[in-house]
Amino acid sequence: MLTTLGSMPVFLLAVLSPYVRSDLDFGASRLGLTVGCYFTFAAVGAMLVGPVADRVSARLSAVAAGALCAGGGLGVAVWGTSWRNLVILMAVLGLANAACQVTANLTLARSISAERRGFGFAVKQSAIPAAILVAGLCVPIANGALGWRAMYAATGLLGLVVVVLGLGRRQPVVARAAGSGEDDRPPLLPLVLLMIAMTFGSAAANSMGAFVATWGAEIGLSPARVGVVMALGSGLNILVRLVSGLLADRRQGRNLPVVTGQFLIGALALMVLSWPSPTIFWPVTVLAFALGWSWPGLMMYAVVRISRDGPATASGMLQAGAFAGGAAGPMCFGLLGDTVGFVPAWRFASAVFVIGAALIVIARRLLVTDLVNRPPREPLGYGGGRLSNPARMASRPASDE
Image 1 (tube, rainbow, N blue to C red):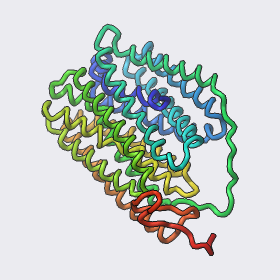
Image 2 (tube, rainbow, N blue to C red):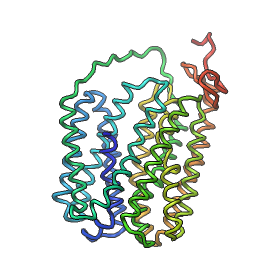
Image 3 (cartoon, rainbow, N blue to C red):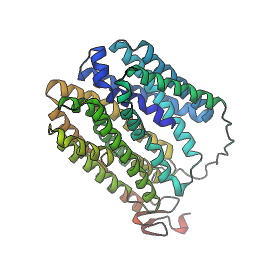
Image 4 (cartoon, rainbow, N blue to C red):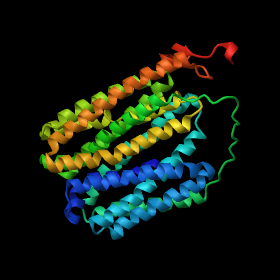
């Protein structure tokens, strides 16, 4: 719920963009810059907040996250009267998203056992489609007497609720295990490739989330209808993410090949979506959201699973890639939309998905080679198979222990 609250402001901006742009008088490129600013501050905030959150309690982290959500949301409702003010306040909400993500990650890392972690990451990463679903359902309300600013006021009030709940939360005492022996670190090159792949996938997916409502209006659909389509796709996306997490907990590895397939489905959906047809729009948009954007939780779990003694480093690199893609993707898409049109922009986003899929394939081969040549300290099953009978097992010989 905390991560959903942190993610919701940018998707409110996406689905309410026809009203916001009309009211504040700005174009697609400025919409992309606004979304990019949000994710840029989220990326910087994640790098700054993470080390601080490790030193303080999840209780204080939650209070800070709620305060930022409250300040940004209520700020948009009161002072969001110009594009410049909107950009500044979305930057605050980007920092709020970073704080929400870090708080959720901190709680997850301290409470979920290894055999349930795939589903745990699936639940957490379902916050993104949940935010889109809620934002899509807000369109009919915003179209009425309340207006789009009331939706941001609601997020601000929820931020205040988080502050109150955080202040009333008891922080459990967590015993930290002392490290022993030499560090068993994951290989750097595959992690860098996966971080770049995450950047590409996030760029394509967040461009879709930011501009699908604008594209729907371009081809003649009402904002309310587009909002319903986005809500439907996001609801199915949550279901697919949860099922993917459950299945990941029942097998030994082969998570990255599934992620590759989801990238390619997203590429195909965005290519078809570039055709300006209202008839094609709704089923392809549902497919793009439901399957083409269902990979973040599984990808995060896959990377943490093979991270050896460096789960924080590995997941941090992936999170940075996600925010970087969220910043760069909508900005580039918006500029393309304003200069050459939305059809080439959608096809460009499709190509970005394909490049990300190729990087995942290369990174996985490097990871498998590393497992064979440098078995981890803790035995690790990979290549598929069930928990009790993995297809392959990487472990050090007894003489090396």
